[in-house]
Image (tube, rainbow, N blue to C red; front, side, top):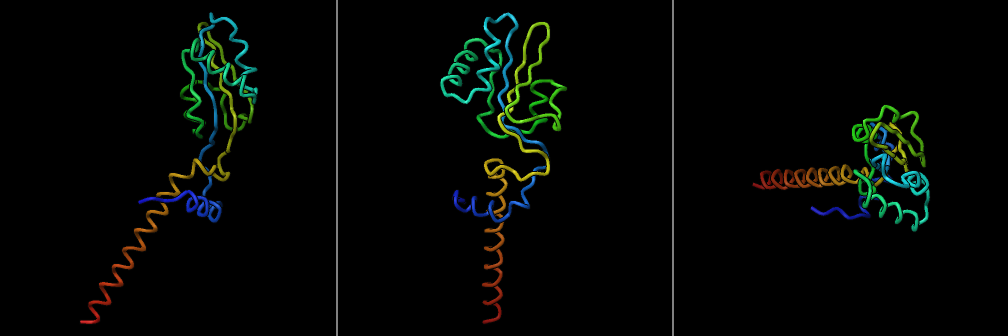
Length: 161
């Protein structure tokens, strides 16, 4: 069963109060790079920059030098997933803010996490995060209507006999 984007948006707009997050969500970029890599200090400024040119420099640099470079396909992820990936105790929901770069260094690696956007627990889910749930809800409502219609037809046929 297909659900159109307009149906999803209409449901979202009408039911925002029922689409609250149970966890903190972030749009983020995670980079893990060896401490021996030259010019890694540039990563922080590229991460913060909104210029396409700087974003392209970051991608090229990371594809060439980073052990891990993940922007999670620019999708919303649970903060807890990001903590697992980075093994960082620094990423506490009450201390994570938009446009912040977290840097954690050990003997061999530096980890960078850039928080592009954040939706804290209890806030309205972003539409593209809620989309799968909304599709499931709409399809279930359609199935329920179909079952009710079939029951009515069956009952009508029984009454007609």
